Image (cartoon, rainbow, N blue to C red):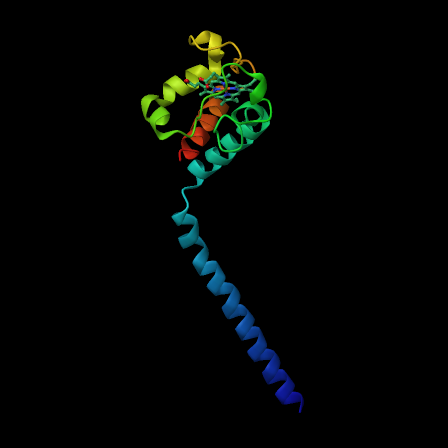
Length: 133
Ligand code: HEC
């Protein structure tokens, strides 16, 4: 009887060990499938957007944030593929950094160069790219 208990314990241990070593073997493969830095920058951009931009530009970038009705002109639709195609990343970053007044648009678009550093601005531009319809 004691021998059988011992045998069962050993089998259970082997099964457990097998399961954990399998999981360990899978990890590098799934990690390699996700390009980490890009995904991190994208999430950072989303944080920035949700903190500073969503109130005017809206959830999906469509220009329908809760404050948009106060603005004339309304924020444009950042998710519009035609708009996206017409602007380089550098142009978008410049508009974010210097604000509307800095790039010949309305001053209702605030300048963010004192609030956000280059890394955060690049990240939010990356996030704007991901909102493309
Ligand atoms: C107070 C409202 C408001 C906030 C907050 C705001 N924007 Fe704007 N934004 C505007 C308005 C108004 C315009 C000018 C109209 C337009 O062209 O979209 C604009 C324009 C832009 C443009 C330029 C579009 C073009 O034609 O080149 C970009 C890019 C942009 N905003 C990104 C952002 C980002 C990123 C944030 C957050 C860091 C942000 N905006 C925060 C109101 C706002």
